[in-house]
Every structure is written in structure tokens, then in C-alpha cells.
Length: 120
Ligand code: HEC
Image (tube, rainbow, N blue to C red; front, side, top):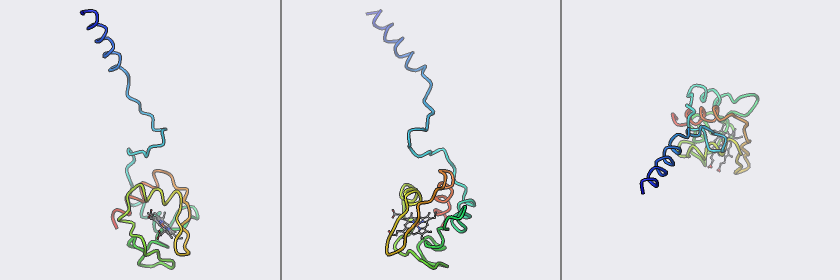
């Protein structure tokens, strides 16, 4: 019985000594990123590297109103989850004859845009 207890203790000790995995290469969103609202504002209003600005279709308030030529009034960005916004940015959307392009923004830039949208 004593031997069993020792074996069990050694087993538990060896488990506890394993260092926690810090890998983030499994495709899950990196929740360690902190959004930069001001940079998100710049991307939303100006776009980056020749890519369309969100404001062009989603307006100054994220609900398609404001200074826009191709207003998308069917969505209110503030009501969308972070995952929905990220998905729309990376995969694009299409509705009512307007096509939202798929943007090649980095995870940090997407986090910045989401942080900005949350302030609208
Ligand atoms: C050329 C116009 C255009 C631009 C530019 C554009 N979008 Fe869109 N967006 C659309 C259209 C069209 C839809 C689909 C509307 C619908 O489903 O009724 C959409 C939908 C969305 C949705 C909703 C997705 C869902 O699952 O319901 C989000 C979030 C979004 N856009 C975010 C953005 C962000 C952030 C940017 C800037 C990086 C951006 N869009 C730039 C046209 C655009």
C-alpha cells in the first residue's frame, strides 16, 4: 500500500512539473492582444495600403448612415460579436449589390478596428 502511495505521488509530481503550453499556433484567436482605438479609427476612416475604408459603406456610426456613398444600412456593427466582425473582415460579405472585400489585415489591426467599433 505504501509503495502504491509513493508511485502515485511521483506520478502527480511529474505531472505538476510540466511547464504550461504557451503555443498559440492552434488557430484560436489571440486574446492577449489589446486593441488600439486610435489606430482602429484611422483604419476605419482611411483604410490601409489601398484597401477600402469601412466608413465608405458602414458610415460614421457603423450603421450605414453618415458620409457614405454606398451605405450598408442593413447592419449595425455595434451589435455584432467580435467573431462576426473578424469573420467579415477576413472573408468579406455581399448583399444588395454591394460587395465587401476580404481585407488582409493583421490580427492586431483587426483587434484595433473592433476596439474602435465598440466606441461608436
Ligand atoms: C464596399 C463596401 C464595404 C466596405 C468597404 C466594408 N464593408 Fe462591411 N459589409 C458590406 C456589406 C455589403 C455587408 C453585408 C450586409 C448585409 O449582410 O446586409 C457588410 C457586412 C459587414 C459586417 C456584418 C457581418 C455579419 O456577419 O453580419 C461587419 C461586421 C462588417 N461588414 C465590418 C466591416 C469592417 C470592419 C470594414 C472595414 C475593415 C468593412 N466592413 C468594410 C460592405 C462593406
